[in-house]
Image (cartoon, rainbow, N blue to C red; front, side, top):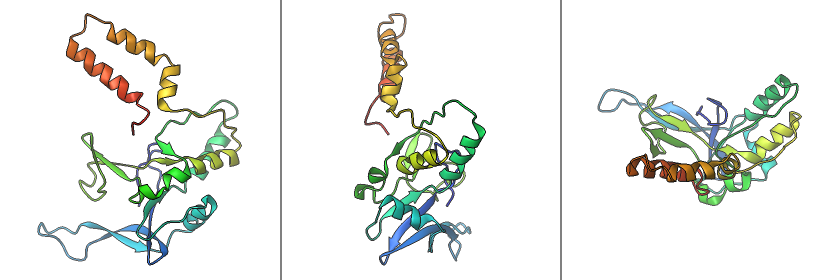
Length: 204
């Protein structure tokens, strides 16, 4: 299944699950019979994993329990190699939501990290509002780091969104908004709440 990934626009990720103790890939199929409205709907179809998918999990030392669902991006290696070849010098700044592999594939995330967004409403059903909602998956950072190193990059550092914004002066900016008496109270409160959400370390 090809899903939009926030770091790499429209980069495909593979959905997988474990059935009968065997790793299976989740492909997209169509229901055999049309529904009451006369249309056939999308459905999950399980099959053998795409070459390289199972090996990626082996490299990461990741194993899944029965029924576990997860996503994996195999294209980041190629993308990162291309970025390395395109740059003679400079820095590559990557901004996205993500987790190291041990957290990304933690047992508590047994339903995967596929999320849908429709008019700012969060969901998990990729076959709902097809073509009218955004599909997104977080980035698995351990493989990203390895792909970057293989492409010749040296990591200069990593930080959280909150720390990055504070280093850019967000606290002073927030204080300036809070002290403005020319703004209606409702506008000031709404802006402060939005800034706080951006710097919330537990935000997703």
